[in-house]
Image (cartoon, rainbow, N blue to C red; front, side):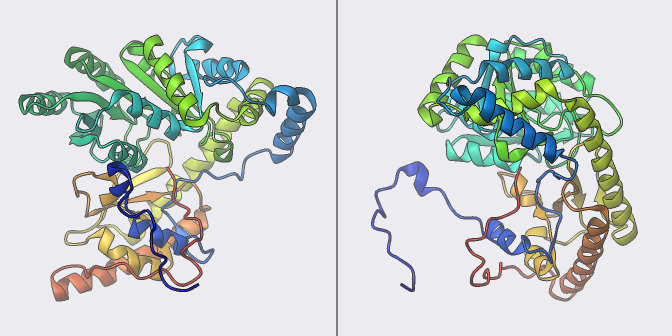
Length: 432
């Protein structure tokens, strides 16, 4: 059957579903997943350092020794062994957590979805960093939150700007519910919120009655230092901590967690039971067995060195090939935030970049208000160093050609090319 199939249910969708639209930019990543394209776009961790023999043995052991539990339905709050191991992991960020405080989820994105579901009504204001994680913006948009960006600097969210924004929104009669932040090696900017700024943000949120949502998947991936004490450790009743094993173990297992005050934790469990009944018992048992029986801290140390090398390759290539760009220097994580020379629109330029066999994420993806056109997020977590260098070289060629177009026409030509036939259904490589 050819052509577009008519939608039998057109007009019957919920208001929320009616607002869902496909991203043309995301469609381009189906093309970017081809091996000849250097993708500086996706947030996929490398699995190069993962001890696959050890993982295989763990999986086998879970089947042989724990099949009755691992292959069965489980608790909506999570497996007890997984909760215990997560509580141990939380000590690395200074949080003393009882295992019963932990709600295990299908990745931290699921935890964020549950939290927004139980806390945010349509029209409620949620404050986010500028720029902010694209996945969080998607969740907030799906629940019809009013997203407001607050100014940030090299130390994180600016407290005075947060206070002024909340006062302005409340004066207009709007309900301001929460502040969402990624405090370690932020996605996309790479900025880490300083210790002093963390104290200030906790104080401001307590005074303003804001729930502080701490999304912290990159905490353990600092290149030259240990993680700072969490926001949660400063205010266990006012902060919800979200964590994930996707960056430090295996994203395909889809195990994340939330730590929340008791009453809110109970709501999260009810929402999780309504959503997925229970997270995967098998995935939880694999992760818990790995954490209990392996030197996972040594594995994280290997990852830190590997990502530091790739970060250095990216920054060195940018300095050589794009010396006029402004680039953040992340001290951990997966990403750097690049401001290209004046007059360039990274969303408009992306089709030409993909045609030149390099991909990135335009800055507009990280702004709910249409900002960020001059910026791009470049990821160094997945390609090896030589591919990163080649990707930057290709990107520099595209930027030079784009500058000529701007000089000639006054603006970047817009438009996203049609994805070639056969590629529209291929999985995109861009993730958190």
